[in-house]
Length: 492
Image 1 (tube, rainbow, N blue to C red):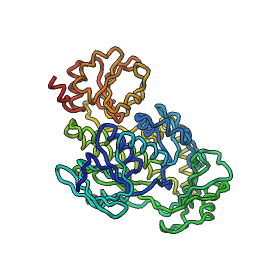
Image 2: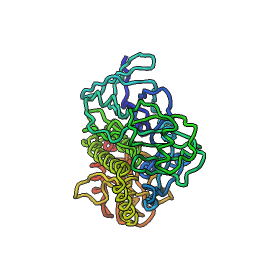
Image 3: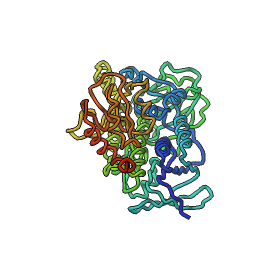
Image 4: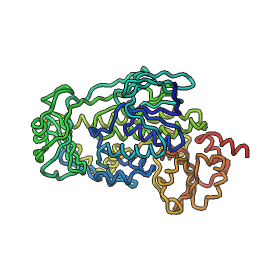
């Protein structure tokens, strides 16, 4: 027998779960195939940046996730200099420290609530596509195989992606750092900073609290480079942390320890026909900056509404191609930023480390540089390419402005549709969106503005223009970005 699905998502990590929830919320039949049988608490990700929190806010999840972790508004760099995140715009001028499994639990609950079907213990072993769909062979925990026929497939199955392998796509790049030690431990003494990080030239150490008495430790010893499968002794970990931080804070009772190596790699194409890659299946880099999970979640936010548009039949011709065009440069920038951070942390000679410290101290006292650094790491400065003839706001992040009636823009986006924001008194423009009401809602700004703005479901600006605009001009913009008018509207 052949099962059928509109979209098959491979991988139930944060990227796959957010995507599945968005698809199901949009009324798209979605199946998630996950090789693991149960939830793992051995996740590496712990940082949720401001732009990701905004995306979660647009899904009604941000406040619940914040309740699980610790909000950090200042980051100490290289032992002395602080990066002030309060300069960031929006509701979340911070980074949230919380274990990845909290993010996964919220996203899984949302996906299930909207009707996504999650199948654990289900491994993809083969994939073949044709112009009409994709045939995927899966194997369950009992070794039985079956075939799923899907209109589209998304590989969110990690750095060792089976989907990417079946597509025959390369994963060019290189290893950046080997034998990084990772552990969850208890501490007898509480560190003075929420995020504690430093290096001494021969290694570095990073301590992050999970808020429940456990701390994540990431440590590296330049003089002891072992393969990933080599065991770790607590004494080895404590020694590296003491050298880097001056103390190990009474580290004890590890619940798990492992080694890993960090690569910088990116797939050449995020789309191959009816198959897409997202998250670590498309890009991997060092954990420096905490960009990995955040970039994957934002991949999913970009792709979900576009796939839903294709399934529902209203996607403009180039909409699915825009996923690669928009997200691959973002992935490349994440590799560049994380690479710069990890190479700065791994500097060995004392003179180079002194120069690094001096440059960082100077930069920390230049507000535009602080804002730029914070914007790059937080994701708030991500913008998508737009034609030079478009308004300068096109492609940029939509700010969370107040709307008439007491709502915020990101609350309105929980509807899952485009949002046309008009100046106060612009409600007569409602007639312009009637034929697109299945995919566009309209709202008035809560304060005077000289613009009319069309916001995409992923909270980026699709179109903006000086107000007032004629009904025909608005409809022309809707046609370009939201597809042809609904058939039922044409019939009426």
